[in-house]
Figure (cartoon, rainbow, N blue to C red):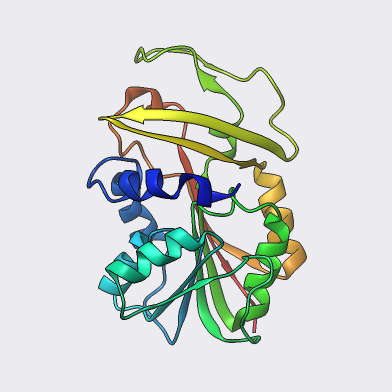
Length: 230
């Protein structure tokens, strides 16, 4: 999707503390998936910069890229000391081996060419580097709740398999945003990593951090870490 069309909405949405699921699931990613800070970290799809800022707090030296110029400008305005670039995740403007860590936090579902972005992550990583990913859980992406009731059924009406578009408009606490992107199966993600030469080291389905009883039964996010073998 073109995040440029939703840039102002996303800046407000992302910068409202505690507003969305990031604030509740980021700790599981940082604690369970992310390795210690190393030489150089790249974030794919940095948006307005909140993940870069959190990575900085953990000691990482981060370069953030995003395809939306307005989001990159917003990130630079709030954090002028870091490097933010307008770039396509499937055609990165870096030499091979430039980084020892690539982070893709809830961004691979937004790129048109997910396998291409994974391949590019492999190219710009040094041997022994890692790719750390969070995506909306493929199972959750395949259906929806019948209602807000704690015991509501989760219904899949279409197919879990295959790349398919997603679009949804959400309103919360006076803020509204439309998300547009792509849904992939776990097998799609695994195949992209395998084709790029990665070895999956760790997979996590974080527990129900939202305290929504429905998510005691259905996971909201999938988080994984993959190694580029030496």
